[in-house]
Length: 174
Image 1: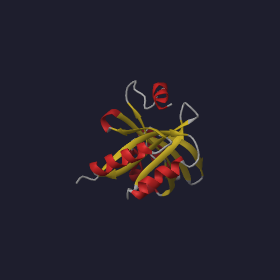
Image 2: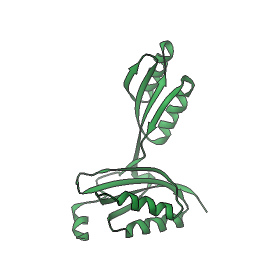
Image 3: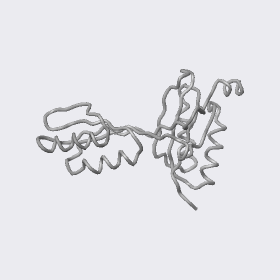
Image 4: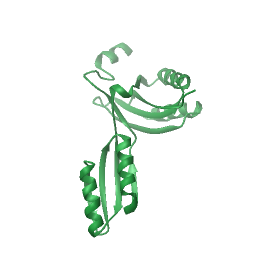
């Protein structure tokens, strides 16, 4: 049995209690959520949730079926890695002065990140990209001294012109 990581995008009604019901479902099925992001969509009545977790195919399929049955869920899609743009945001505060500051700033340029704050003794850097890119940057700056960092969960959008949820979908569920 393979225990692979997967991403699920979910369109839900944008109201209180929906996130609790979805996260409870993961807990009931003994799934650990790796990342969980949620935000309003182009339609303020809807929210888009992206969840990453790990599990075998049987448990993954069962989980998707159970999420689909929840009242406020409009659509659930397993995001296939080969057809999905996956991104994450990282803000990291690195201890750096003098020559070490120059080295950290040079690294931030190589990783195409953005300096969002500088103060005596530290620099805050914002970086977006795939998880592997963020992990590589953290590993690089670790010897300089990471004072703190914060990461978002993954967000996912299907490549091409296809959309997760369209007005035609809302007519089908009405």
